[in-house]
Length: 258
Ligand code: CO8
Image (cartoon, rainbow, N blue to C red):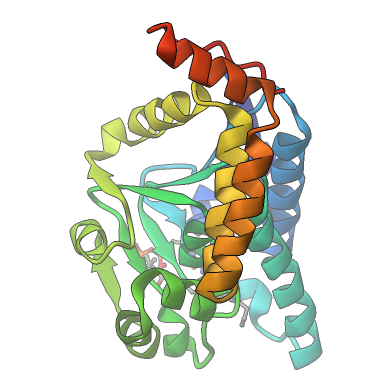
């Protein structure tokens, strides 16, 4: 069985990291698998939303593979980090919404994968943290940037500097995850949210994602200018005509993605 699996159903691609014996740790093979699966889901016009999760009931992803990292030189690590950044960027920037279904430990690179996604849902047994400082390193798959954007400097610093793990409940309280569910319900809830998003105008959702991302990249003026351009562009689509018309005719819209 592959270390990363990709299933597609009803417009939803589910990408699963499948190394439960190593708590789904990210080695080079897994990073390549995530890249291929994400690129496949992005290229497939039948896919509207991507969910990423971990196999088993214990871990989403317990971090970069510590065994593989052991003995790597700084230049090896640079290569590994570039590979990691590319994978995280794919989930963060692909023009389709991404949902992390955090079904257990999301640590180090696992937390970084989750925060590269647009939305995070967690099971009630999830534990989340960036424990790299415990290993004498620090988060290098985007964690210093994305945790700070998501939580603000104070909370991000506390998590990074202490390397501590927080519960799903605490993660929800500080805005690190959107919702918490009993473990048995997590995937159904993730699919339900993905299905709901899939009923919306696909081009509008993609342009909105691009615009939201811009809020994190530049200053507010730059973000607002970008938003102006993209929201204007959304008005050139057939979906916009259908969406407005359907509202006025009091019926569900029939979006075509055109
Ligand atoms: N890498 C490799 N193997 C792992 C990892 C990991 N990150 N996490 C767990 N495993 C393995 C264990 O070694 C063990 O294997 P084995 O059975 O062969 O001994 C198996 O998974 C089960 O794990 P445990 O027996 O430890 O399970 P416990 O329930 O006792 O503990 C924990 C669960 C608390 C999650 C524990 O496994 C743990 O602390 N894991 C490591 C967590 C961690 O430190 N993650 C951060 C890694 S570093 C990182 O992610 C850096 C990203 C950026 C890299 C680029 C810049 C440097």
